[in-house]
Image (cartoon, rainbow, N blue to C red; front, side):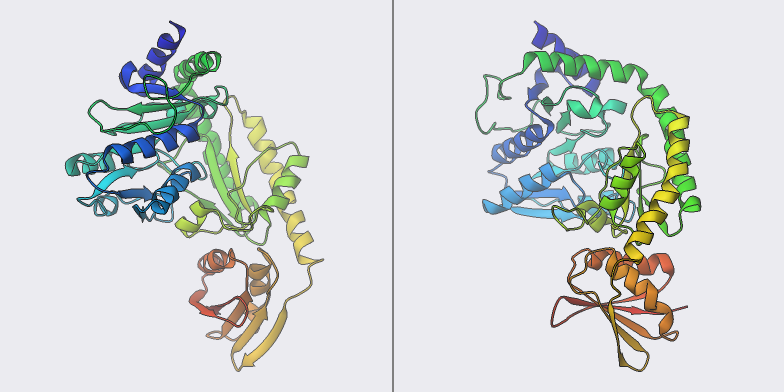
Length: 415
């Protein structure tokens, strides 16, 4: 009875029938089960899968597994706000497309995707659309004629270890792996009851809280570029989730900045490329073509106050300045050589971001207008950060060339 009641409450919030919804051990498990089950159910149609380039890693990992098993995957690009073009997405549909995936909103930058338009194109092509709605379900149901939907309770304030998967009636679906008689898995009843109760509770206040948090995040979006030099606020300025705002700071290591803000009492995240564990760019920021270094993702919790935001804005400039000073002073300068008249070679091999961009900024004024700077780097993040720096500072990014070690990035001084 408790399970059925929780299922009914969750289905009402999602906007589906109770017998279309099942609970999973996590949001990741819901995605994996949804992708695998839909692909298996439509295997006779074909083995082509479509995903956007900014999907959550759980979707991308499912796509990689599908490729490893002989399937084909198309990754749809996004614009600089992180949004797919509905017409561009629809053009990737093929007769052998078994499944399409599109998140409702991005987990790193908050950009809301055109799910309804993409769902209509998929419906016309006879292709089911799976929506990863983990980031948006707290704010309301996902509009449009989607076919499958995944969510995660901890994203709306519920307990960790509960996900949900919706499979609309009429969608060919063959559950993979160990399941119960409904094909969804073995339920954690206490956690499920809590998850359904928390979803109902946040939805009751969602409309009012969305207005309040949107005003606070808009304050951050507007004032951070005025308070901190060389900052790029990323994500769609209008079509975005209420509580997320993301920005990137030139000449700053993201992880170091997070530690500085933590000392001031602020727990923020980073979609930065330069994490100590991977040293690789955030796939979301990379797909958007925006600056990845010094990235800060602020997720305002329900109940966040104006005073919290004001204190964050007061602390941030000093924290950024301190990190920049640390990176600029103790770091040995790169080796600068004159290759030929009007061209400098900056050797930053062995140095991680943001050092290549810092050294580029130091020497760009040493070449005449029209001259070239050739930055040598073996850091993967430079491939994203140097073009982003050029766009921010109105210099020309010429391109990249193979080098004896690493890659040479060419920048032409315009002013």
